[in-house]
Length: 518
Image 1 (cartoon, rainbow, N blue to C red):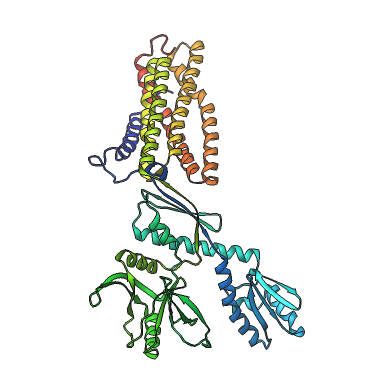
Image 2 (image 1 turned 180 degrees about the vertical axis):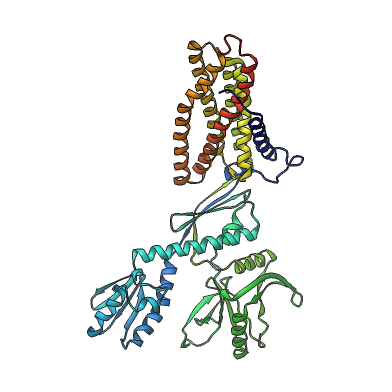
């Protein structure tokens, strides 16, 4: 029936007012910012940088197999099985064993109940494939093992990337996984991506190692270049300390030398190792190596047992700040390569906003004029409901602090069209009812009731499409589907509560009038 209780009217009014207040915080930030929430503008509206990063897992695979080779050899040594000719090449670990033990080794990697599982919980048998070629056994990662490794690397890299970007203080970054080896980074408001690219492009793998003059170092040695590529030094492969032992790193000014340095603090284990190494290595050079290049190699003058120290290397304050940031956030598990980048300037973003607003205004004005000319008073009621619908939609987006993109504006425009479509269906149905029913109240009530099925079917179908787009689509498509999905609910609310309430109030006052709707 065409009846609204006072409680229902109050409820509709309060709900509408609630969302309007939230929506107003986007337009009157200095005066009516009741809830301190706003819609965030996306990259295409605000301007900023878009980076698609790809994780290079090849070094990770090599490193994992290299680490595994030592424990692998020791494991079989305990079983009195001698592993010979152990070699790592092309992401495959090759080795040989005598014929009598070959089957035992194969069973360790094919038997699900193998003793290798509890002994090496990180290297389960299903992670590897083992084959035999030319009297050699070849061990490599299985497909499942590679998927697990890549997933693990991506999770770690995602966290490190998030830490680095958060350290810079970028406003509302969007950091998402793409497939199992890519990371999408959107940085609204940032139109100069060079510093971000520099920070994200560094693995930040920090190690402390002694400089050696002996090619026969028991741990092995390698030649590494200094960061400025002007010189090189022979460095032991033995790692005294790694970045994992750092608690904090900050840029500082050395008062004695008047140069910018990076001061660091070690955890308890790191402090103990560092103290022991500096105690036994007085007079030696300690190379500080970052991503395979020597930052500096100071001579140890005394034991450093305090668990803190300094890294010098001719830094500017900006480069020292960036290095400290990298060290604090931790090393990436694998190198990141930028495979796609886009920069949207703030002027272009503002042009997109203006174009979207103009499109919305033109469409909205045309709809308002059409509805008013077509249905007169009821057209005016529809237009009021449309305006409130937009405010409610913006209010909902504001509550969730959603990110509005240009496709999102398209979703709002489509919402306006759908809201009009629902009202047109109702009014045309009312016209049909008035042909057979002289009582305006009954005709209007029947019009709303009988048109409900068609309106719900149309909106549910659209909602299902929006849900599929949201879960299957990428960023811009998600923005479109989000505003469209929310718009469906606000449209139904505005049609069956706001517009219907206003219609009821008008019809009750003019229930004896003929040709109420034409």
